[in-house]
Image (cartoon, rainbow, N blue to C red; front, side, top):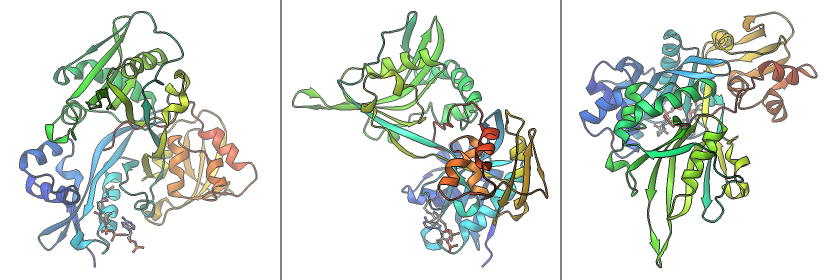
Length: 406
Ligand SMILES: CC(C)(COP(=O)(O)OP(=O)(O)OC[C@H]1O[C@@H](n2cnc3c(N)ncnc32)[C@H](O)[C@@H]1OP(=O)(O)O)[C@@H](O)C(=O)NCCC(=O)NCCS
């Protein structure tokens, strides 16, 4: 059956389309106000709904993002709130929505799309591939010291959330411009997401705090965190959750984390969505105690392969020919030569053969072609081709990092 899929036109449709995934969250958005708050970042025209007659039974949104890739920011569909009601699952509605959404993303001039997956099995069939990893840590008390003493001229202060944006947004922006995987945040995004703290989303913890670290009197790092106090047999047994910690440079990283690590009353300091090459590993006296658990983070899709490859930076003069297979968007299928910062169709012999999704890792910098050849998911058609392609795609940028699930 062909499902009718189109963008929503008003708040009522928006609420019902978002409500498809909201159903699994227990009935969200519950009222017009929360739907309106969510739509402040997601225009109606970017929220697709799937209809069964006049009933909306599925939804899929795409934030108009600017996502950093090696070399700088690129326009990107930030795929979000994808859901199909339990009454209509496994009838091809997600597939129909993905088709409409990817076409729409391309029409909006976004050569790539990115998402966080609720389950890893869902999106490969639509051409997405694993592009980055993230880590979470749990540091026990007694093992939280840094290898070196504090830097000079540092100070930290707590800033009320309502006053934090003007201080912390520029720090985030400096870091995100050079970090693949980070996306630009608008004022509305800051206000409605990282700096909002509705009591019903505190999960038993205290209010969200913002600490700003200054180096030589200039804001250089910040963290958003929440305390979960608890005492057992008279001793502190609580924890704090570091929701987001962003630092501009190595000294700022060490001194921001020193503040977090040294907080009293914490049996454990927990932090989430960290870059897997976090400098803390080298700064802690007991790096093993980080106990980093690594998981998949961003899934990325090259929607317009030629435009996406051209939007990225290549630092060497090498070239590679990729034989791409894209069953879901067949217009991308074929042989692409990447050389001198341009991607063109070619008849030349291919160096590597791969499904389009496997390009996600090398494209963003999370994985190399060599790793994917070793995993058997990319085929090397000429000896040494993977290493050459890796040299071409190497960027010198840090590992991709997306600090926020969207
Ligand atoms: C995930 C979800 C959107 C899938 O929607 P759907 O309309 O049932 O998906 P489709 O019928 O289009 O499925 C297409 C294919 O993907 C497979 N598939 C989809 N979701 C799957 C899942 N969660 N696990 C395993 N396979 C899945 C289907 O089996 C089908 O395979 P086939 O083509 O070989 O038959 C829906 O189950 C849902 O809303 N789940 C809860 C919310 C959620 O996880 N949303 C994703 C947020 S990132």
